[in-house]
View 1 (cartoon, helix red, strand yellow):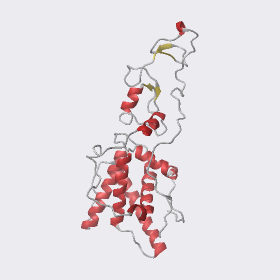
View 2 (cartoon, rainbow, N blue to C red):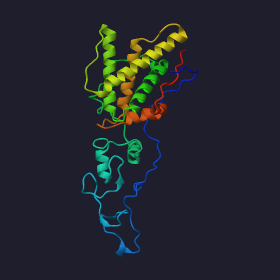
View 3 (cartoon, rainbow, N blue to C red):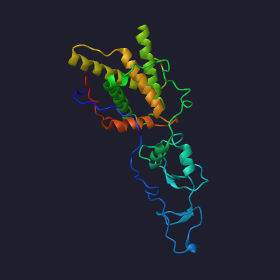
View 4 (cartoon, rainbow, N blue to C red):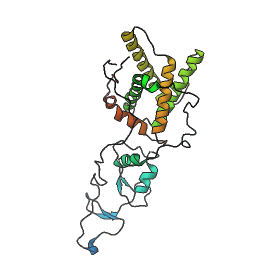
Length: 271
């Protein structure tokens, strides 16, 4: 972890802003032949295969009933707008550069209190006033650690990462209160990997504190509060769908160096 005189401000993770550089027909699988008059126009549900030159009906690759109109980057075929909307991040593993995913995220409504009613948000925890600004380097470092780890695990989803952050926060608070070191067992594959990465980042942070100030000021309580803030942030950003990566895509957009495997995160400035 490098030390610099500048620390980037923490931005709220977003997942929009990518250009729509893929048109619905960019893969060239199907193309309409120009019709000179109405008699030559193909009838509804008929399309031309550019490779074979043959005419035939083209149905959605999912429902096989409605007419396909969109290229799906998660499937080898094309799908209809209805299936695209209904199966997006439910059945489909939508990549970050999908234009339809980007378009949907720009118009997606924030999760309401009802949507978050069943989520673990540590509602009993009250963060100290000004915590975000006083401990901004710590929160930025933890977020970078999550982004760097998620960049090497492309099969992770928001739900798995949020569950892992929640478990790490819960274990840390248990240890802080009782002194008992207990790692909550879980089948979640992201838990142990993220736990190790976050502990390594906290150790690096304390090392920088000691080098610059001669003593370590960071307490387990501060780390716990930072994790609680991250869990709440992630729950607010994700859309709650089973295969959602809205939170993770936002982190990778905020910390582009994480995707390159950079070992150093945001600079730590100790005041």
